[in-house]
Image 1 (cartoon, one colour):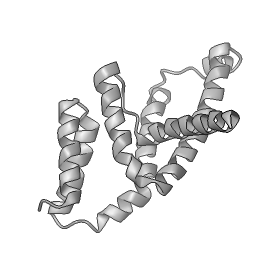
Image 2 (tube, rainbow, N blue to C red; image 1 turned 30 degrees about the vertical axis):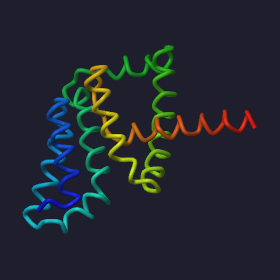
Image 3 (cartoon, rainbow, N blue to C red; image 1 turned 45 degrees about the horizontal axis):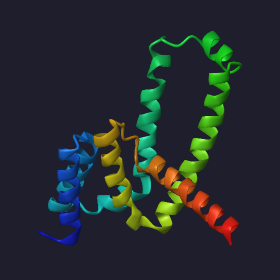
Length: 156
């Protein structure tokens, strides 16, 4: 019952509760339930497809204003020619690139996941941030590591 995996999930659950991060607390609880109910065969499926399913629901939530008719296509078209619209295009492209790099980094260094989640909790508590997921945090981490590597290379 008190295996390393379960203790780690319990710690994450408690951190999520203390930080009022319902997503972290709920995720830890669901994973604990899967472990305690012997449904661990679902874990590799979640590991393989969980990001895709999560991104699907995030994208659905972002597109609901279109479905509700709250977004005018003419306004959308015009926005591409404004400074905020152009920066949004660039920001979207850069963010997806960083997310891809972050995902590769997590595949190679999965032990960093807990640090990313704890960092996200700190961001929630200290700066009132919103946890959009470890993938973006991994992308930002990748960018910081690349910047440090670049600066280190310049100083040699």
